[in-house]
Length: 361
Ligand SMILES: [Zn+2]
Image (cartoon, rainbow, N blue to C red; front, side, top):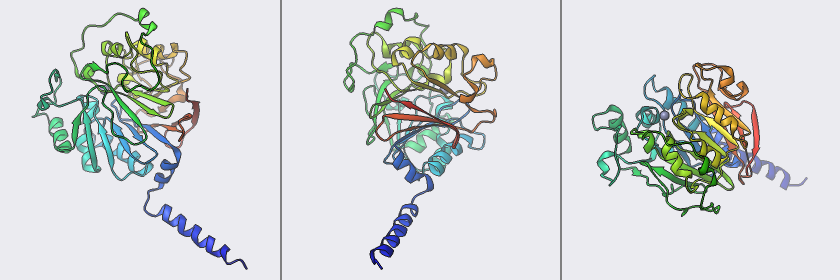
């Protein structure tokens, strides 16, 4: 009898035990699968979770407060139960509106958060920044954010890079300003964008925090993802006119929940995504003009929504098979899995629903 055979079996069993032991069920899968991007349903707020192949986690916005911590619980379920992370490495808050940072208090009670990134707080005293929508010192959400992030936060400026291993995370806009030049770019962007000649006119200046939202481009190999929070029309245009500062992307988080005071056509035409995912709610976002715009972009192979807009007709929503939540109560996410080499990515409806695969350009 070959003595090596039982020895190999013992080693195989030990190996399995070592793999399954200290890790939660989803963790090993995460590490072997490449990059995950999960659009967690927070009912018309924002909560986009990115987990790298090394298990580093980045949450962009934390949903609404209240409802017995509905949104923090949904986020923690995905982070811990599905992705196997025991803490959150980075929490990014794009701007100071309730649907983007309302969940911070609840989230920080449920999970350890190591780093906080935002567009600045009034007390930072950063020259040239204004804070039309707070957060004031006396605002309960402002109190919760300051308490959770004390000693662990940093304000981001255009051109900054988040320190994430294996993922290029570039800040393209912050506080109403956009990245200058193409300092961090690696794809050789053109100096002039011809699409600007047919750009629609500017809108009245947006005095709200939306216009001051953080915007990011994430690159993983050839794959690129653009998330601009709730950035509005005139600043969106500055990102692509007269010079394109974004480049083409594969995945577009439809800005501002699909509202039509955002989603500047020249920006969407310029980034020419393959897939668009809208984090709308049953009664928030999902504007017919935005749905129509996305249909007009020739590169878009699939447009997804977290919810059907209950106020508009079926033809003013995307294909029902690409709407994650049939039930208005929601809770189902949309998950993007990018191959380890960035060559292709799949979009999955819910935790174990249908998947469609797309090639990275
Ligand atoms: Zn919002």
